[in-house]
Image (tube, rainbow, N blue to C red):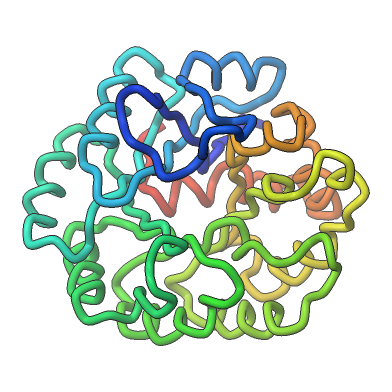
Length: 278
């Protein structure tokens, strides 16, 4: 089974000013598509989607789209366009002709907690729907209370929660997160990425964490038709994990599913959500 990795990053520290990662972090170095291609050797990953590292940067998306002409692995780009900008529609029209521009994301950690429900953000989401552009929702558990208000208002926009909203895996607690995710899953225009499971853990603990209860809950509320696989490469370098190890964690928590259902999560749902041309 070929795999679509719907969530990977590349960055060049000398090209752009990144607020994260910061100096001193293990991943504070350049990561290019050729390194990603090397990392996935020996796996069934054949296609991948780049996801933004910079807010409000059309230049980052243009850079990756240019590299995609030399790296066939890149089948889609989720750009960090500014939803509140009066030039949003102009930026969309600049990227659209490439055929690779599939979505927009914004890093909420850098904004006030209720940013996603602001009126100017809402107008931007309306514009995305007009052009059939998806929105990746990068949130943590404390943001989840705002999401139903947004997704219920923008039913023509397709949303996908990144990294199952980063619950506290290391504590084993599901309270709060479990209920909020169940509420969000009621809206059929919202998907969920099973991604980033080990990225924010610790090198000496990530192997012993029980991720299964979290994944079982996501599958129970979103179903296999609205979940998709993403690696979050290269962030898991911080826990000294290889791509194969990261992929194995996801395979293990999905191993109870039928081959057909696994095919949906590892490939078919990403193609459908992002309108990929494979």
